[in-house]
Length: 374
Image (cartoon, rainbow, N blue to C red; front, side):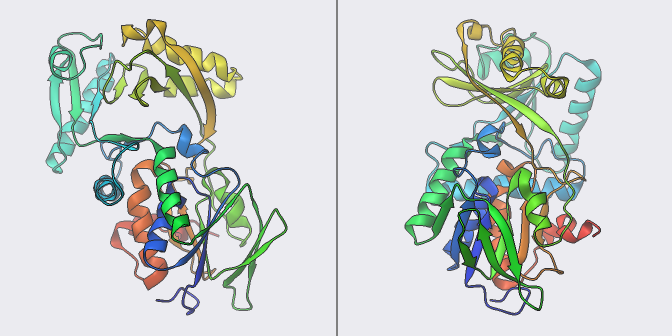
């Protein structure tokens, strides 16, 4: 088992311990690698904790290869739940989508038909059926078409990261929280050798995995690599309610909602995201999200805003993941992606195998780092 430099990987530094970094580290440790997890904050409390956290492939139809990767991500989540247990993080309750825009409705019904032809489970219901069978608290017209994707899920990302990191550390891995990476040293052959941290320490390593999310382009610069990233902020609000009135993730008109435990919900809207750069304060953005949710779920009339956060999504410039080794820097690998919640378990498994065996899986063929010109 050798890395690109021909050396057997002994010590792997995973930079960034959100969902992707945690999944990569967990899979590496299971296969016998010595793992060091490095995070500037606390594991799972960055973008992972401020994601809509919807596990799906229905929103990933722009290319068939991207759909296939996300479908594999869904399957990998189910497998992971069977290994570590599903409690507190895995909620496979399905997903609903409907709209009040005729053009958008025609588009998502067309997408549902395409997905059905690809073997993806989908049902088209009426609003009345949804209220009767699935979500009695919703206020939606009787005849509006609602698409149900029964195999989709939502994940409590921070709880999943806590579980994975806890197992890795219990097995002997090292966790460096509150430490940023200041430098990456390479040998005469250009391969990775050391990582310098903000606390003054220097780690001898054989492999680095750049899973630094929004900071991934900065980490790439430390090995003289250009990783172009989009600037795409999003705002997520958590609201408290006496009892959560919905049971699954959903895209309603103008608002996305999901449960977040027994007494909390998560709200997001791309319409509200568009106001971030206009200078609106996060508290006002959260209020607008709450106002969009109340007509859809009247039981939220007495809910209150508990938390709000503007986070920057880690999206490579072309919108697709950057996953795998970089040939020009032996021992340097990337795991950078939007949809990290969906893709974490499958990317973790495939990248760990690539690092330890050199085998490059075909699922990642369209998403390799070398597609970005240097």
